[in-house]
Structure formats: structure tokens, C-alpha cells
Length: 189
Length: 189
DNA sequence: CTCCGACTACACTGGTCTGTGAAGTCCGAC
DNA sequence: GTCGGACTTCACAGACCAGTGTAGTCGGAG
Image 1 (tube, rainbow over the protein chains, first blue to last red):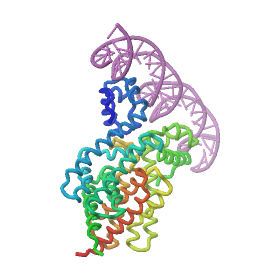
Image 2: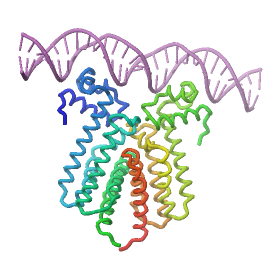
Image 3: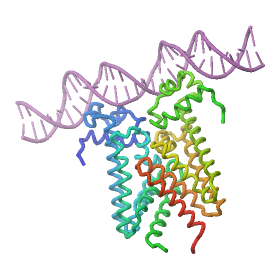
Image 4: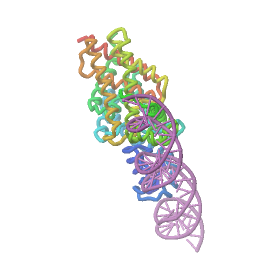
């Protein structure tokens, strides 16, 4: 990734925290600049516009999250453990936060499909579906729909956990994902 | 429901459309008043504050959606059809809109748990889970976790459809829900 | 010694935000 | 015929919005 100047790094860190905690439209650039110990001039010199800062926020978050998921996949012992690793990450991650999925939340605020952040959001979901597909193939499970089914359980768990305040959603999703994999790996008829 | 004055009715209709299409923070009360052919004075006389208008928007939307789901449940022929009716509504509904779930979107923007809209949001999800539970019981399926599992598939399909732009998510969710019900209604071991 | 890039300081534009105050019109019910 | 509720008009407050212009500081690399 492109190396950031110290000021830009701080701006991005502060923006990430505030955008996630309060929403994108609810946080002004003045606040971000002040909180970063930087002038607004610097913010605009580094990022060009608020929209681009938002896109940079989403890219940075996506990068961190992919690294975490990838590490969990690699750390798993068996092929099924690898497939289900994102669900384990989800359970760790929800313990730290109750504001839901940053990408879903950003989608809610970015109504213009041409906004530079929208591509990052869609990519994040597609990457996870492809990761499921790749790990299912590796586990010898061949089902064209299963990767999407797992994505759906994952996203459903995240939104249900946060929005409906149902912590049990995480367990149900993991168990459901495991059952779906077992069903496909050992067909009975 | 409380009867609204003609002005209030128009304000609520306009607010519903604009809040859903562009987000809550992105739409100002001036715009809503102007678009409703009403003065801002009237808006504040009827709703008291923007936060209360937001809550009224969510309540109205919740009411319409429950009516639609309830009608679909009642129209279904068999017990399993009743359980899966919300998935049929989802497929109809997504054909009309690509901005995702209004309640999830509102959650993204309402960071204060004490906001009057937050209770409406959580209730909407709980109501659906309870509907699933009631219809599962009626179908003679006894599984403590299945209602939540179905909620999860439902929410996952909605977010995946909109955010990831994966229309197939709707079919996968319906099929997954059906399979989960069959598995529980006819246990093999 | 000079140039460049990171950054500061700060005023300023033009617009939008939620919310209020005061005065007045119109209409139907009692 | 008067009273109340729905609604209008419009000015106003005070904060906040994204974004720019100008001028200048500082340190390191060539």
C-alpha cells in the first residue's frame, strides 16, 4: 500500500474511528482535522475531498479485515476449519464492537452508485464469497451455491447481532454453516 | 393508528421517500417541508423534532411492511408455505428497490441508542423472528434455534442482494430456509 | 544554498443545518 | 358568531457544512 505521511496516517485513523462510530454524514471534516491535530488545509492536501477520504477509510478498513480473515484461514487445522474461519473471526470481532458492519453502514449513507467508496464496499463482499468458494473447492466440496449461502449466513449474523441485538445469531450462523458443508460433502442420495 | 392531518400525511410520505432514498442525515427538514408543500412551521407543529419525524417514518414503514408480510402468510396454502412467506415477500419487494433494508440503513445513521427510532428498528427484527417461531410451531416443527436461523437467512439475503449486488441471494435464502425446515420436520436419526 | 514536501495559521465563501417567534388566514363545529 | 385547529408567511438565530486562498515555517536531500 502507498505509504502515508504522518499527518495523513493520523487523519485516516481519526476518520476511521469517527466515521464508524457516528456515521459518515454525521462527522465533519473540521472535527476530523481538529481531532488529528492537523489543519483542514493538510487534510485537503492529502485526500482532496471528503468523498476521497471516505473511500480511503473504507479501503483501509477492508485491508485490515482481509488480513485478519486470511490469517485465521491459514491458522486453521483442517479444510472445514478453513472454510469456517471467517465465522470465528466474526465472533471475535463482534465482541469488540456493536455498530455493525462498517461497509453495510457506509452503503446506507452513500446513495450515489458513483461514489468512490461504493466499489470498495461491493468488493469487500465479493472477496469473502470468493474466499468461501476457494476454501470449499480445497475441501473437496463442489456446490455452485454454497459459497453464496455461507456469505448470506455471515452477513445475516452480523446484521442480526447488531441491529436486532441477538448475540445468539453468531452461534446459529456457525452451526448452520457447518451443517450446510457437511450436507454437501457427504451426500446421502 | 393515530389519524394524521392532511399536511402531516404529506410530510410523512415525502420524508419516507427521501430518507429511504438518500439517508436520514442527507435530507434536511427544509427540503421535506418544501417538497410536501408545507411550511417548516407546520412540520415542527406536527412532529416536534426531526428525530421524532424519523421515528414516525420508521413506524409507518414498519406498519406497512408487517401488513404485507401478514397478508402473505395468510394467503399461503400449507404450513411450510406460511413459514416461508416472508421470503416470497422479500423477492417481490427487492424488485422494487435497490437501497436495501430501511431499518438496517437507519441503524447505520442512528448512533445514539436512545434515539426514538432505535426501538422501532429492533422491534421490526424481533417481530419477524417471533412470526417465524409462531409459524414453525403451527407447522409442528419444534426447534428452539430455527426461527433465528430463518431470520438470519432473511437478513443476509437482503443485505447481500443490495450491498453485494447479488440477486441470487434471494433464491439461495429461500432454498436454504426450506431445507432447514425439512431437516427439522423429518429428523433421520 | 536552494529547492521540495509536509505542515501550520487563519481568514473567508456561500451554503445548509435544526429549530423558534410572532402575526395572521381560513374553515368547520358548536 | 365565536372558538379552536390546521396551516401560512417570513424573519431570525446560531451552529455547522465542505472547501479555498494566501502566506509562511521547518527540515532534509540534492
